Length: 141
Image (tube, rainbow, N blue to C red):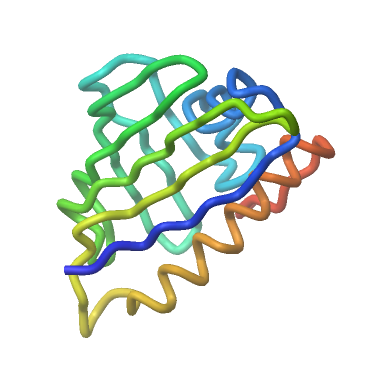
């Protein structure tokens, strides 16, 4: 099993970063425009892609302005069972975001760890741009 950990500073309040990570209209601004989500521990956040890819993540921990944690329950790739963590810390410049995807299984049929890391780098930059400029680069269909 592998972990992916990335850190970045975003010029936005922790509350705004939290909303971009937890609410459907926020997620649609930087990841995919087909999202369902509910702000409740135990509920599923579902992110869809045109090629039939559906990711379902159960919210396992949630605290406004501080964290959003998911356990992947369904994935077209090797993400099932992994955890995705978004931990927020206020800074003088905005918010320090510590992102992690933990317990990711290597796969011959899914994305490699390197491909998954590169994908997250792209979408984390999209998140940063969305929060700082109002325009992210989500997957749109």
